[in-house]
Each structure stands twice: as C-alpha cells, then as structure tokens.
Amino acid sequence: MIKNHLRHGPQRLHGSQRLTDILCLACLFAGMAADARAKVTPAALFSDHMVLQQGKPLCVWGTAAPGERVEVSLGTRASASATAGVTGEWMIGLPPQPVIAEPQTLRIRGENEIRIEDVLVGEVWIGSGQSNMSITTRESSDWESVRKEIAGGEYSRVRMFQVGWIAADSPLRDIAGARWRVAEESSVRNFSAIMVYFARALQRARPGVPIGIIQSAVGATNAHAWLPGDAFENGKGAAHVRRWYREQLEKLPGENKIHAEKLAEHGRAVAKAKQEKTPPPRAPEPPMGPQSKRRPTCLYNGMIAPLQPYAIRGVAWYQGENNSSLQWAGDYAALMEDLINDWRGEWARAARSDRPEAFPFLIVQLPNYKTGNVWPLLREQQERVAKNVPHTALVCAIDAGDAEDIHPCNKAPVGERLALAARALAYGETGIVWSGPVLRDVSYDAGKAIVSFGNTGGGLVTADGGAPRGFELAGADGKFSPASAKITEGKIVLESGDVPGPVAVRYAWANNPENLNLYNKEKLPAFPFRTDGWKWPGSTTWAR
Image (cartoon, rainbow, N blue to C red; front, side, top):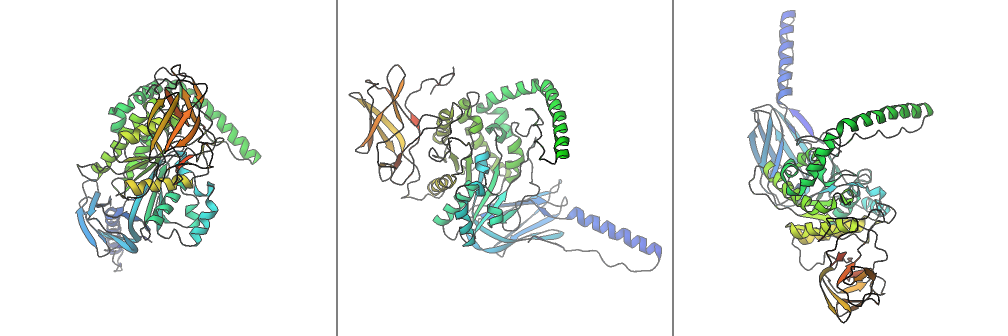
C-alpha cells in the first residue's frame, strides 16, 4: 500500500480567548495549506506492486513545492536527492540494480513521505498498438489454462500497468488513475492477452525474474496517432499524413455540421432507449480534427509520453490493420521508422540523456484475415521496418489469424513468439530458434524455381507431412498460378504446368492464405514473401 506520512503535522490548539482561537485557527489553516502545497507526489507509474527495470539507470519523478528538497531511496540499496524546480517538478536518478525478487520499499521524502511497497526489480516491457494488442486474456482461447496457472502461482512475479485511453495535444507528464496490479484472476482477465502470454513465456525462460508489463494500446488507430510531434511535423514518413490532415482540417466546418446533426439524432436515440430501458447507442465520434481521439500525435502525447523516462527493456508492437489500405500502406515502413527512432530519442531526452538507447522493438506481422485488399503489402512493409531499423524483430502470425474475425482469439502463439524474439534480441540468448523460415534467394532452372530459406532451424517441414502449400509462380506476363512444391535437400522446388518459364515466386501472398503448412522443425511458420516488384491491382504507386 502507498502510505503518505506528513513529517510536520499541525499542533493542537490552546487558549480560551476568541481572538487567540481565531489566530490559532488561521495559523493551522495556513500550515495545512503550506503542507498541501509542499506535498510530494510521485508519478502514477510509481505505485505499490511496481517492477523496476534491472540493469539500467532508474528515473523517479513527480511534483512537490517549488524549491522543495526531495529524497528517494530503494530499500537500503540506493538513495539520491534533488530539488524541485520552479514548476514543482522533480526527477531523481538511482543507479542500476540487479534482479530483486523480494519485495522492496521505495521511499520518497519531502515535507511528507511516500512509501511504495512490494517493489520488485526485473524486466519491464511495453505493449502498444491497436485492438489486437488490447484484446483481453478472457477473450482469448487459452483463458481457462491461464486461470489454472494463476491459481497455481505461476504469475506470482508478474505485475501489470494498464494505461487508459487518453488523447492530448501536447505530451502529458502523468497518467491519472492508473496503477500497478499483481497478476490475479481479476486483473489478468482484463489485461492484454498477448502481453500476458509474452510475460508467461519470458518468466518460464527466466525463472525467478520479475516481469512488469505495461499495456498502452487503443483499437482502430492508425500509426500516425502514436507519432511523436517532431516525427509528425518533420519526418519524411509522415509527409503524406501531414497533407491528409491539412485536408481534413479544411473540410472540418462541413464535417462539424454533419456531426452536430448526428449528435442530435443520437440524443433522441438515447432518450428513446432510456424510455424503453434498452442499452443506449454509442455516441458518434467527432470528425478528424482537433477533437478526434485518433488525430495525429494525440495518443503518443497522452499514453506514451507520460511513461518516459521509466526504464524499460523494450516494446512489443501490434498495429497495422488501420494502415492496410492503398491510402496508407505505401508509407508505413517510413512512418514506423520515424516512430521507432523518435520514441527512442524522446525516452533519452526525458531522461536528460544525449545518447538515445536503441531499445528492442518487436513487431507482430499482420495475420491472415479475409477482408481488405492490401494486407500482403502491409506485411511486406512491416518486413522492411525490421530490415531497415536496428534492434527490431518481426514475428510471424500468418497461422494465428481468423478469416472471419479481425480479432483472432488465438493469442498465445503470438505472445510466445514475441518472447522468443525478446530472448534473442534483447537478452542475446544463443542456441535458440526464434524465427520461422525467411526467404533467402531463388533461382530458376529448366522451368523450375528453387527457393532457399534462412532461419530454418532444424530443417524445413510441413505441419501435416504433406507437400508444402501456398506457393505461386508467374512468368514474364505477370500472371500467377498455383505451384506444386516439394522439400528437396533443405530447399523448396516449385513448378507449374501453367508457367513453363517462371520468373517470380510468391508465398502466402494473400489477405487470407489458407491451409499453409510450411514451418521449421521448431514449429515456427514461414514468412510470406514475393520475389517480384510488380504493381498491385488498383495502385499507380505500388512497386518494390
């Protein structure tokens, strides 16, 4: 429990004369007002049950009276102090700490004292993006197993912090109402399923190490809502977004008029629902502009900036569904490059460091889903992000989707594959296979295509023992036909009677590629790919 202890409380009143009483009361209220002004308050991230990142400098911050001296200590292991600035803000650095699995007390002292209990030191990860990152554990297909594991104590060192939906025009310094929670059934059930499975897998691989997971995700959001201000205003990847947003602002007067009509209609529908005792309809969202909760930069400002400079190991990112259109997909790799680099830079600036740390950024590639027409292109853009931006990794989920539901409930494999990527990228573990097969090169001979792969682990296999499925070949005319495939000496040999002279190969190159079965022996799926750079139907700009 966080405990707040005033170190200088008011004295008892004495005297019987009315004037003396009045003077004493005035002094009392003045003292109480001074104490209120002087009250040291940490940021919301510093609450009972928190997990601090091991092995990195730790920043603790909050507010106090301007000029007030604030001291922070972690048990008997470390302490430091600083003076609050003219605005009352303070930040104190503590030296890196080893893994600490036994509860510690974080003390913050000024005119009052805050004691934050049950503090552990381990690994801290942020899960961000859109709805598939925020789908809860109770909505996942593995929920009953998790409930039993919680009862058995498997999550005893997992702690969770959930950021609410907050949109802001400038970077916020704190998050109202949020706090760390222990991993109990009541808390885990409403937390990000992917991050819960990620934490479970990490803890199994690193027994005894506390895991802190922070969920900061909002459904149906485009990547530009998560951009820092500088990346939006100056980044090359956001040039298209800037033009588009200016157009939205120009259309705003007319859109606002339409929105006002929708609000009036909604009001009537709410009144009717109240009268009929039925659930009221959802209010219409305002048009894209200054009032939209999905406008550029607003979610970064409200939901990521307040987390800085809390020490973290890295970020798991699941987003892209809202960018999977011809309007947005072509700029996605450049946009994400700016986003990742600026997140890293802003974390360093918040810590008053001039050396940005390239903390790992783990990206979930879009799974299979039937709707839309450019999901393969968005997956390709996500692949480019992982190739172009240092210390990033791409996790394949092409077998974990649902053709009928954009929110597949099979979240455990995705969280577990993210954990494998973290073990390789963030922790430098060797001897583990963390990725499925990835295209290395292709050659053509006697009407056949021979495809070789990297990340084959123990070797290429098919999940059902049959021939590999999901391959297509095309000749110079650009027309693709299904290809027969077989595994020969660790490579895939392809041919098609309809394509006597193949020049291009595609694998799983569809929104919802069905019946895929190509894996490595470690049961990680092969990544979708194409070897051509031909334009996508309906697009004048899409080319490799």
